[in-house]
Image (cartoon, rainbow, N blue to C red; front, side, top):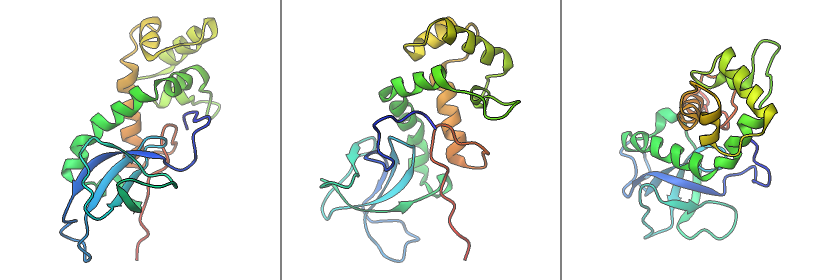
Length: 193
């Protein structure tokens, strides 16, 4: 997982993906609910707002252990496939916004990533990065550590946009089915009854 030095293991802030003031039609208990994406670990959550509180799509809200302004409680983790259509359409913007806000963490991923097995490197799990790009990145970071994602794309020739690579990897991890989780918390899988 990406270095989160000084970051708590629990999510502190989240980005609202969708707000359902009357709840989901399939829910037995009708209560307002919001679907959100955690900023530290890309955890997908359902939140119950405080009575009368409204949340805007794209809004950054506090969900930590302290006094929450808008959130009554966290209903729980949900999977990518439990997101509403509106939440799924907002997901790309939210992930890219988090990547931009935490750019230094992701630059450190390029600077410090290492092998997973004898034959597989963490960098190779980014879509579009093969052995040649991996070796180019490693060579460049040994010469001088990267200071920004823009610098990664400037110094490593023919590498696709690093932000896009990171976004695609996070989305792949959120959908589940991946053997390795580098950038996010492994997805929630509800237990079968």
